[in-house]
Length: 213
Image (cartoon, rainbow, N blue to C red):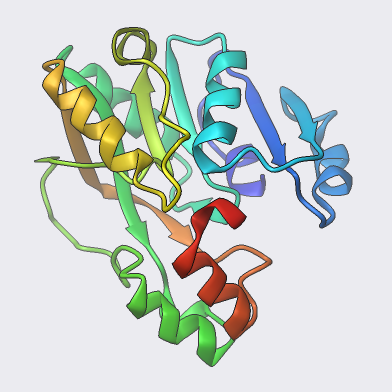
């Protein structure tokens, strides 16, 4: 939330938080920001699944462009939103734009987290300087700007996949509709791992069954 609050982006926007059956202090944290950011908070007692939670957020969003952002990510630059919007607006054929997804191993506190950051292949482990914007085949749907018209044409994410293939399925449908997916490595997000990924058991659960998250 702090990295969003620090953005230099001042146009109209909304923040939609989908509390996906969490058992932590999410609601308490949201209350600290509710008077400072344009937040709409929706709490669900039962888990919706990753795709289901994203679909809920999309269905409640009003904007022309939708940013999907995981709870354990930090925007790496103050102009991240501005740069990513500029990226997707450059070409009307761009349907999805992602930034560089970095899991900074040196900032992870536990050895288990560091080991699994390699096992998951959780993006890059450092910035990639001077890399150009490039077209890619897929998006992880974790720090992505999507045109609303794309969702209107291809539909919501498929929540029937048990092991997290909904992102690949969605990207495939987007490309088959004629849109491009691009990566802008000039800006990045830091992935610091969710609160529940603090033990070997929690990592194994994530690796084996993403619906449990």
